[in-house]
Image (cartoon, rainbow, N blue to C red; front, side, top):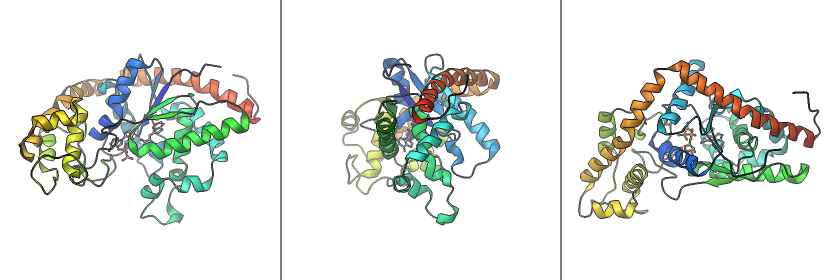
Length: 337
Ligand code: ATP
Ligand code: LTN
């Protein structure tokens, strides 16, 4: 059995318009940093999660490549970290079934994401996969015995359920899984939409003006930021009574690594226009080199596939070990390797 040293796991869905600045600030930049402090990092393109809402096969295939290239271009090093595609490792779905038999309907139905994504659909027509979504997510992490899970604020509830399931499994069948900790940044863990600061910036909003896409060209980035909604005052303020401008400051802080206080001191006495102009340049300082690297990677699909094949092999060996132990503990036969 491999020991439970600090091990990082996180995932991103290959859905919608592709990653946005909220994904970068809330998740990817931390994933890149964690590579420096943690020897074992697993980063996964979760294609099976993308099937919980209706999907197009061609778009799914293309989305997986794009998302993998995005992660590498942001700074995930596929030599150092294990970068792979969820469906390449069968044990994720096998462990999901085990967890499905331990979870309770009530705890799944209480999940905010389930309630929100299922909204507007009659209960009879909501895909059952949407309900099972957090179980697949729990299996993703537990099958690697990961200890740290860097995510945005929207995933906090799923992490709580994952911890409950790990504890439940351990108490019924013996100590098998470390209880994983959510790693959620103090700032930027919930970037809001540019056109509505009450809604999370999301890949699948269907409103291009609401997100800053990581692949948006410079003129689009400048235009979207210029048009972003602001608050009723005129001064740059941070706090609950200024949600739109606070969100712009969170983005500014997220792409520069500077504190909001520092940024506000720089902008003192200035209105929204200078804030937006400075923010657009700061965002582009991150996106321009990212986009150059991304284009390079997408130009060589064979190399990208090869990297993912290697990631799958590395991931498989860890997942197979854990699932064999799970089999033993829960009373399933352990087939020959
Ligand atoms: P979708 O809208 O399709 O659900 P998403 O934009 O929420 O997609 P995911 O692939 O589900 O993106 O999430 C990848 C990572 O980015 C997760 O850790 C998630 O918590 C984080 N994240 C997503 N949206 C935001 C946001 N607006 N602010 C901060 N972090 C975010
Ligand atoms: N549900 C997550 C994506 C995800 C994930 C994971 C994150 C799937 N499996 C395991 C962390 C660990 C989301 O961001 N929507």
